[in-house]
Amino acid sequence: MRVLVVEDEKKTASFVRKALESEGFAVDVCPRGDEALIAAGTTPFDGIVLDIMLPGRDGLSVLRQLRAQGNRTPVLLLSARGEVNERVEGLDAGADDYLPKPFVIAELVARVRALGRRGGESKATVLCVADLSLDTISHRAQRGGKFFDLTAREFRLLEFLMRSAGRICGRMSIIEKVWDYDFDPGTNLVDVYVKRLREKIDDGFEPKLLQTVRGVGYVLKA
Ligand code: CA
Image 1 (cartoon, rainbow, N blue to C red):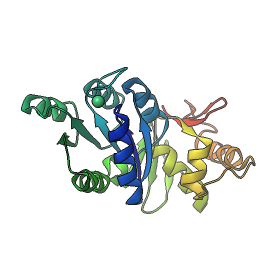
Image 2: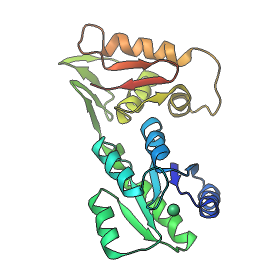
Image 3: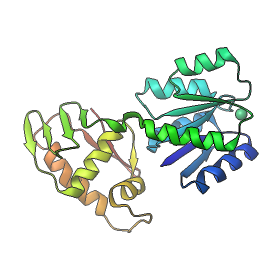
């Protein structure tokens, strides 16, 4: 489970990172709200721990923007004040949970774990982007009424791209999620598979859904 921790207080950020890492989470830390929005838009996280008072852009504004972009990643809001109206505002803005500071670290870890179980959009069994759909149970994909077969690896790639629809998927994150490698094999592996997938889902169809973001990776979107 990969978690983004958005916290500008260095000590708290480091404390939270260590606690989550020791529980087996992969953790990215971001000290600014505006940077967090970019990070959440380019990397698929399983959960976000979001402080409210942040430089760049405050947590509530980050949350509203994420939800407005269709990003459903579960969010645990942190607040130094813990006022009731702030909590209500946070939940209205689309937060999944709320924890006032100061908190007991074990409680934060338990709440992050619960966020992961909630799973955001990842529970859907049929994924749809425009007229393309993928049944994650039967592994059948179709576009505009035409069904096509996918190899196991093509299925994992398409599933990952569809679950991340609208977000740019970097080559390295594709390698991690689709091949389970934690290193860059230094080959054109991803490009080869993307090309094969494109021939199936985009050839003969408009608009093209699988787009290249030069120098960064790929994005699947309508
Ligand atoms: Ca703060």
